[in-house]
Image 1 (cartoon, rainbow, N blue to C red):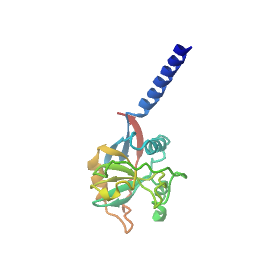
Image 2: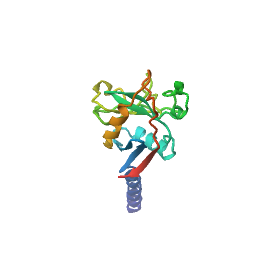
Image 3: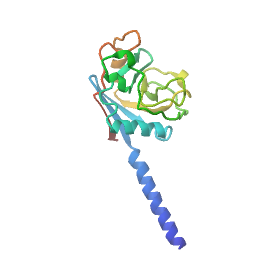
Image 4: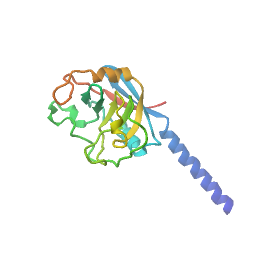
Length: 184
C-alpha cells in the first residue's frame, strides 16, 4: 500500500511539474508598426500577473489596443481596451472588468522592465502595463514587475519619441496589431 501511495504521489509530481514547465518558457511578442517587442516573463516573481497577461493575450484582449500613454525619458503604457475607440477621452480608464492583487517584488524598475499599471489602490491592476525606457527606481516596491524586454527595445524607443497630446497620448496611434504568447 505504501509503495502504491508513493507511486501516485510521484506521478502527480510529474504532472504538476509538466504543467509548470508548459507555462514556463513562454514569451510574449507585441507587433507594432515599428516592429516587434519580445517580452520575457518573471513567473517566479509575479505568477498571478504573468498568468493574467498570458490569459488576456491568448484571448486576443490586447489585439488592436494602443500605447495610449507615452512619456519621454520614462515609459510607454498600453493594454486599455478603451484605446480601441476613436474618442480619446476614455483612453487609460479601461480594463478587463476585474482586478488582481499586487505582487510587489525585489526586481528594480530598470530600463526595459515590464510592470503593471494601476490606480492609487495597490490591488487595482487589471490589463494595463508599461515598459520603462529609463531606470525608474522610484517605482520599486510600488508597482508589480512581471517581465522584461528581451528583443525590440529599439521599437520601444521609437514609440516613446512619438509626438503626444496634453495627456501623453500619441497623436498618431501606436497600435498593438497583435500580442501573441510564443514558446522560447
